[in-house]
Figure (cartoon, one colour):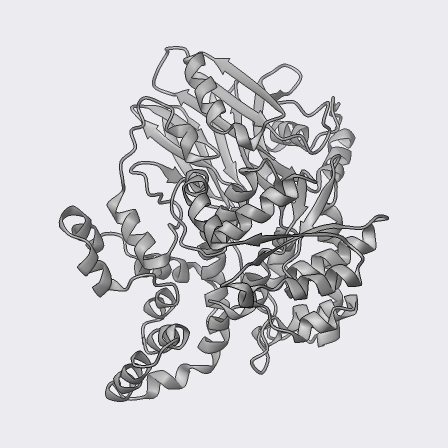
Length: 559
């Protein structure tokens, strides 16, 4: 896990300003305090900050092939790198290190831009092909690792965080009003937009290719939810395969040359990860949880986390959030995020990452379980709520009026308003609304108000829905969440808050093989008789997690 940055003047001959490259590296120092490296060649400059996790001695970057015709800077982890090393040796390659980074260099020699298909992991990297004068940027399939870019006067500027791009004198910070519209409607900003005008997030599962004076972006991964209706399989068959995949993914994510642990919320996702880690390790798993002091103590789930910690005899630590922490940390957290994410879990992520970083350099987390296996309340509401749209408009309005008069009914009001929409994209968009269209119109004026007629959240949903190959309602919701909510809220804040403390966070549930398996599962194995994450809970019970599978966690109730 590291930070990368770079500049490529593909329409220029002037050499890269070394001081500029250093400033860009310094802006992301927190992502890689262990080492730094740079490569320059005429108008190309590649910068790197390293957080050493695998092959601490040999994994220095930038990394090249033997004749230095291929140069790579890489942020992330490749979990199948040992398998790829063996394949490369069979093809005649000589590997100089034991790092996962080197396999990408040699895979590119053999496979070109198609090398991304061989990678199983999380990554954002830049690769320079000297012979072809080609710069390649690539981001992992799910968007676990970030990568941002802008183009100014024939110069491509990129980095793991927006703050690195802002060091370039040609990049002046200005708000993109249409992105503000997306934020107010969704609580996050979906790729490729950012809150900064002309700065873009490379979408998950995409590569950017800059060569011969042109820049093009290519999608290299499609998530299919298409199921085979003729397939005859039992619940036992599915749980057997899921358990095997979970064990494989957790085992692959444990490869590390430094101390590691796990975030433990007490929900079924993180608890399953900890249970499986305990099976593979010969020492107690180091676990970290976050709770709340008064007046929020009743929102704390530490009791659930401590049940799991005791059951698996983990080396467990807690940290508590107080109202003062929210006030004192707000500016610091916002600086690390680069752009706003209206998610109440952000401060919690930040503080538990700080706690973990005092004891380990890497953690496994349970992120992704809700999006893979349908853990949020809106999935159940949507499945059961079609009858709402069969009511007359007057009846729906009357119920909404009654809900508005009741205190503490925000959740039911959102659900009723969303379920009342006959248009699918409008309905899904309303599950996320921070401010509806009327509220935004009242809040904004002038050029900002005009931006409301540009790219809208509903249009974003409509575009993603058009790419989904399933007609099943739940599958379409999960597809959109995997494409928007997961990378641009959960994974974005997870990366920024952990890397703020130089802590690598790995997400075994988002191994793309597991994601593809989950997508093809029949919907009734995800939500069955209002029980969400049905198949994951069935599988987790094999790890003796019955108490957690029958209990409710706040994470599974919200959204």
